[in-house]
Amino acid sequence: MRRDAFSDIHPAVSFALFAAVLVLTAFVLHPAVTGISLVSACIYTIVLKGRRALLFDLLAVLPFIIVVAALNPLFNHEGATPLFYLWNGNAVTKEAVVYGLVSACMFAALIMWFYCMNAVMTSDKVIFLFGRVLPALSLIFSMTLRFVPRLVSRIREVSAAQKSTSPPMKKGVVSGVRHGISVISVTVGWALESSVVMSDSMRSRGYGGRGRTAYALYRFTARDALLAALAAAFTAAFVWAAASKAVYFRSYPSVKCAPMSVGAVIGLAAFAGLCLMPALLNAWENVKWRILSSKL
Amino acid sequence: MQNADKKRLHPGVLALILALLAVPALIALGVAVWDDRRFYIVSLLIILVSMAPFVLRFEKRRPGARELTLLAAMTAIGVAARAAFYMVPQFKPMVAIAVITGVAFGAESGFIVGAMIAFVSNFIFGQGPWTPWQMEAAGLMGLLAGLIFHRKDGSLPKLLPLCVFGGLGTLILYGLIVDTSTVFTTQKEITWQALTAAYGTGLVMNLIHAAATVVFLLLLARPMLKKLNRLRVKYGMLQ
Image 1 (spheres, rainbow over the protein chains, first blue to last red):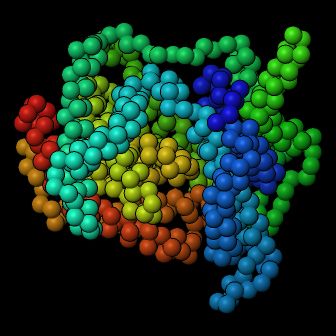
Image 2: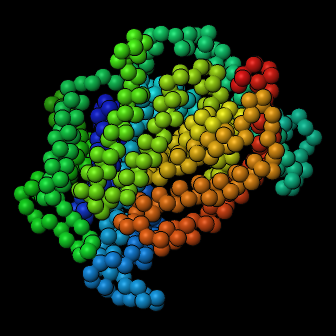
Image 3: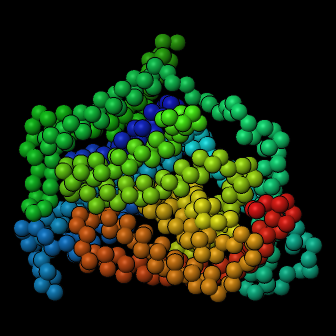
């Protein structure tokens, strides 16, 4: 992953921004909104991981888009304008095609945003955010993340040890499976036993006592407050525009979109501002860095 | 609150009350404003609210260190096992591990481990709109296994009914929940044709998944339950 300014801000702010973008993208089905969201997600993917990763992610999303876009007109025959008729006499309507295309792009945008969120909201941030609200589950989460690589390296060790101590393995599927099962059995036994040792150690070090502290790397700075206020203002403006139907789109019974108005422009601009905030923050930090280094 | 010991409302209870109040309001809002997306919104909210009681109850009784580390170990085994079978599509041991946990530790732990395996392994396989539904489905399988097969004295269940339960549960319950979520996420109106199409296209995947659950239960259930029983004898756990 490349250096990303948005990853350095307070996790509460980045989490809230992702949540707002995901919820608004999922709930407001409107071609412009979906388009803005998808394009912004692609831009931020380039910032985060580069152009090749964007191509890779888009290729992974493509099958979903095709299935979703094709499924709706095939099974939904509502709508006023039939385009052509299927072999069983059902109409494929313009409305159903439009709805299928828009919801396919919405689906793609959601997945692209989830990819970005995966990269930015690392496990330590998840624990930092939810450690107070859900202490037991966050602890299970963080211990699981530590256990998995330990399990994998243990499996390698056990496998090597078994190969070196037992008579040379015969070739073939059966002996391979038998070897695999015995390795897994040993490793699972070890994992369960070591979890008991771990819990004893936790207890002797005072787990469950009062005054639990958290390893907190993040401080809520003035920049975080400014970004949070901006995001809240963008969200409020867009929700207002959507609620007052200035930003409005429906595909049934006939495709209808609210005409461009001042409210629609404000709402869509606010949504674009919200979606582009991570990428713009990076651009802003780059400019700041150029200015600072040119003064040297 | 009149009771002295109930002076401070537990934040979890507060969240639950808020959620229960918020759902009808959001359903009304969804119908009024977003008539295009109301199935998606309402179904997502119901999933989240139905998970909340388990989570809050679990958090509220403040589980001890031994329980937490054991549940984490079971979750890690499930995640590692899912990662190990990465190359085979849909051949996932996730449900089998949740079922075994439910049998050994009871319904609540089965739910927690099933949901956590789905959540954590999706950090590897990709989070998405499907994550809450997968969590709910795998959690419910662990929950049901605990309700049906969990015995306080730790006696092992018969393998045949366990495998039948695992196979049918994966095919019907898990498959139904996850396939329905696809329709809810992408369709405007829920029609029987769309549902049957989703179940039809999902059937092969669900059959593979069910077969995987049966195979893993056949291979893993006995030895793992014996190991867990050994922990009970050796350390006096799971009483």
